[in-house]
Image (cartoon, rainbow, N blue to C red):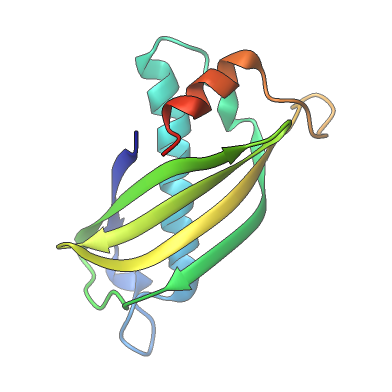
Length: 133
């Protein structure tokens, strides 16, 4: 199952070249990732522990620029793979059926006490598997 989210393109996301600045795409992905991990867990009345993670790697393939601010873009994300303490997410950013970018991030679960990586829990693995495509 893919998670769908909408992100608002602010006018100040547009840079001097007249399109959304490249760094903003990672911000859109970050916002969608947080909403996915927090609200999808909350909907299931589960403690959202999957938010206890850091991004270890991020890649963006820019396909077509976003030229318009003051509007929403669609963001679909899904789980690509799950490891012992990490997982990979894929995001597709689009508007009006046009794909603007694809983002790939690798997250590592961390202990908030030790600030070090930790294995994913069984509950987290179940949650992640629901969003594998």
